[in-house]
Length: 321
Image 1: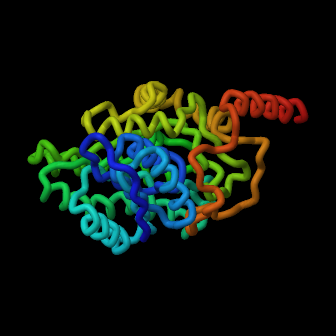
Image 2 (image 1 turned 90 degrees about the horizontal axis):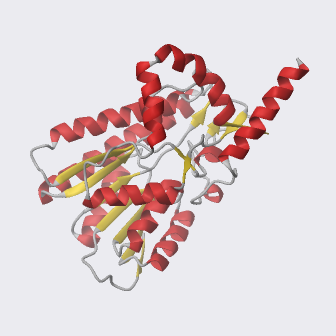
Image 3 (image 1 turned 90 degrees about the vertical axis):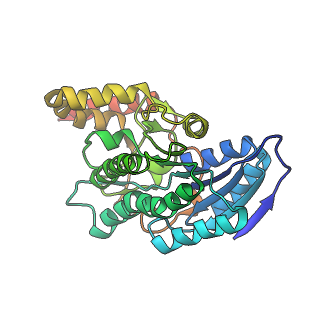
């Protein structure tokens, strides 16, 4: 545990806890909360990237930063985090559970420990966070828990079974928690679902599909998603889908299932893979943290450029046949 104090804000700072704060959406959310002058608690498995993120939060204007290493898939470690925050600050104003991992590959091809690891971090991690945060919010009779899901928690896509299952589960968990906490109007459970976001999660994913994944267009920046998440602290009950494109995809899945099922596989190959980046099977960061890959943005360039390159490659392959 380490703490870094910065200059105080000109408004009453909130105590904001962000899991998955070492990379991607979580890191951007921590920095956005810091820029609002909040006390920011950064949680992830590895210390090195967390310390880097904490330094960014200090520079952005955080009232204070606190670094806590923990695996959200471990219930005891989550309990320790909540206790440490209450010891330091005495309250929880907002908790953003953004920790998440991905695995690519057909269901039967993903090793059992990797499949279970995705479920453990994404879904059981969300349960663990809720288990220890909700009692605090209820005792305070106020506060916000944000569960970061995905548009993939509303649809089906090939070669991403553990991630799909985990995100459907997070959506269900959020709905359950909303129902169970309706008696306290100032306790807010927020579920948010980004679409494609420019983060390193695609490169850090476990991969048994042969090609690296990439965010499909339209691609949002982590900073935009972070702004939407932090906005929900003060304006709860905003729409859960953080991209209008999500609504189109969900409509196709729910209303035109035959069309969706016909198109999803070729469109996934075209827009959600990087065919210029073949990879050998590997576990990615599912079972162990990979500090070198933790940053806010990915490095795959323009989504439309990637789509165009994939289209050229697919046409060339058809021509060769």
